[in-house]
Length: 241
Image (tube, rainbow, N blue to C red):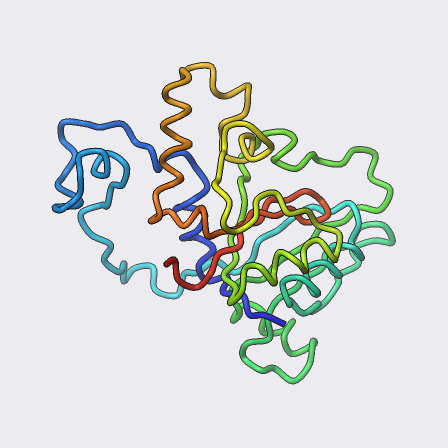
């Protein structure tokens, strides 16, 4: 199984999950890239500092929670494609179940021990499943919502793409292809669905597409895939070349 670094989840969400890569120029924007062209300065903004915050020592992202329409299928996909381990399923009732998956990076000796100490592990995935649900939520690529995608780091993006297709997922954009977030399912996930872009003209939409061609975003080297429930996942290499 290939390894996945979920510790980059927050950075991936903040870095790639919105159109903020194309920010409007402003008179008070600081000198963020001294050697960059004017257009590059308008694209990336870096805050004055990224210092540690001692008052928040010990804070971290522990898990991502997703509602699934098929718990067995979801567990199998995330085990076989992402390499997660099924840690436990909590059966709150005969028809309502909550399952946790994660990497046993600390080397615990049993699933019971992992469960007892799961708050020591980062990058867990929780699945919530109601058997016989009369209404299933639509994934963000079908109906825009506040969820965009989450990101994975893998040693070989192409290998990961192959596993996605083999285990019931879909490859939306292959690594090496340009990312166009304005004319397909990705538009909804990136806040650029038809219902959202009324205030943008064609030139502004073209500018957004061009911005994702910037090698620093890593968009071309990344793959975008969907799990069997339609949740969007970005697969990135450890280093952007």
